[in-house]
Image (cartoon, rainbow, N blue to C red; front, side):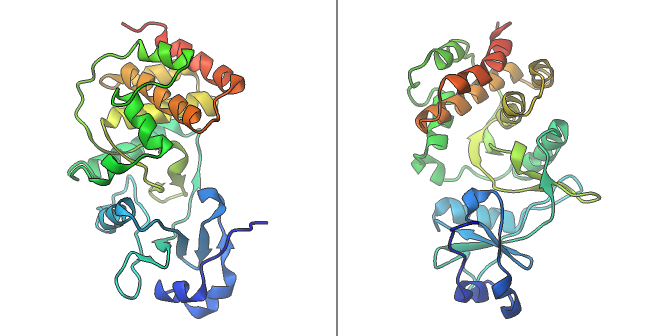
Amino acid sequence: MTTATPPPSAVLAEFGVPAPHHEGLRNLPGGRGLTWRAADTVLRPSAGDGETLWKANALARLPHSSAFRTPRPIPSASGAWTIDGWEAWQWLPGRADETRVTDVLAAGAAFHRAVADLDRPDFLDAAQDPWARSDRIAWEEEALPPGDTLQRLAAAFRSVTAPAQIIHGDLLGNVMFEPWQPPVIIDWAPYWRPVGFADAIVLADAACWHGFAPSEMLRLAEERADGRQHVIRALVFRIATFQLLGAWDAGMEARHAPVVDAVLDTVS
């Protein structure tokens, strides 16, 4: 049973949740156990920072298609995207399926085409969380943490020619599928990198955590420009994050070793 605090009735009312639904709040899986659903509204704690507001403004007007859709942000009665430390989003049905790798990649491709014209947001420069730092480490903008695995991967860095744009850097578990509906993309993790890097994170995550064959990971990666190089950087991104979080140990190294060995096997 969750010990998370649900949003108060005043917040629910501000976001337009009808009073009869105030007592029927349901805690949702994911989101660190802090996300709640009331009728067709999802509420979660909000930092109310530049990233929060930027994503809400972008997703409020993002064109959808038969290839993907996203939850729309819900404004408060005053028009603000956040109220008393909470934000609200449209609830859309669907379940993640990390085995549907090519379907996730297809939804991600449609999403990235839709956001391709967005400018680089300023909040990226200020982010100092482990994920933001590890993204910089993967692109040689911050020093590499110690560790043999990271050193081996970094030794294989080569230049990448693909242009950068805003991407979703955590797609695999955040594409939701529902029969007869377009996939739903949630929990946008924004980075300013080539789209191939977003694809490579999907492939690396699938191979390291969901039984996806490293050979198939490489086959799909090499269909894309700089594909193997993006997978190398995706592995650095993930491993550096685990190290910065204090979660990298012998078991984690063993889990990643077959994928690391596969991607480094024929680096040119």
